[in-house]
Image (cartoon, rainbow, N blue to C red; front, top):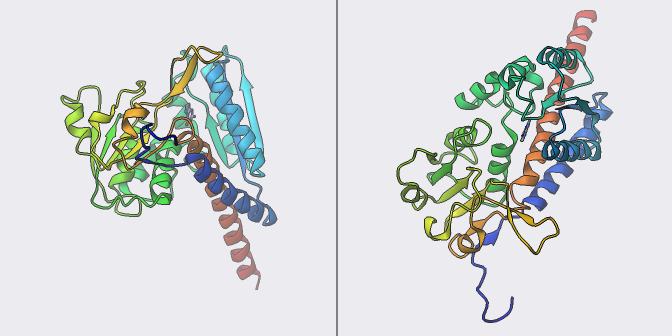
Length: 315
Ligand code: GUN
């Protein structure tokens, strides 16, 4: 860095590198399971032609193929009825080659997402959105699936050596996909948990009062650069889940990606911080692959148990 420019105080948490390490571990698990006769399979369903969703789905398909998984993306027109989508989910529920099912959100307005989520078999719900999996997370059972983004945040914290035990963790945002499961994970009595958790949201009276108390601050609001350096406790660990765009005339597109945290001011106050892009984003796909391996692993275990039981009966 040139003399006279500000000194980068916070260490960057490299989500891209951590996600790559996880994807390597997943590929090794897929190879082992494949040798045992179970090729982990992920089915992704995309309804309609939302361009952001198409990009995310393309990335998920590419990553699952790169890890050696089977499956692929089923693309349906926006005119697909709810009954047709539910029939497809039933078909995937019954397909023994499919271990994980993901229906990309948002869905067209005439389809109720909760109805679709409830139709996915909980043991194939690698998104962790089904009420059964959400309930398991809350009561601390580890045999369910956890929503990929908050699960990825915990991996980032653990693999970066952040001690969450007894820490004041403040989650800004209360969505079902990120904020609520994030709080549930941080409060569990295990690695990456044991924190004292506060959840802030749009009705929180004095947001900065809470964020300034945080040893670990998780921003998942969906508002560009809303958390500024003056709202952060010196030395805090800042995790930015936001994925927003802001005007940037220097870019060909006229916009650029930014998070929920104002990076340039936050980096001077925090001890560790995730960048956008390259922080939480890559972790979401890595955790989806990890969940799919977990689903396939259970099928392989059940097959081994059945084979063992048959052998015992025969002997
Ligand atoms: N849309 C944006 N993020 C997600 C995700 O993690 N899962 C699904 N199913 N849809 C999404």
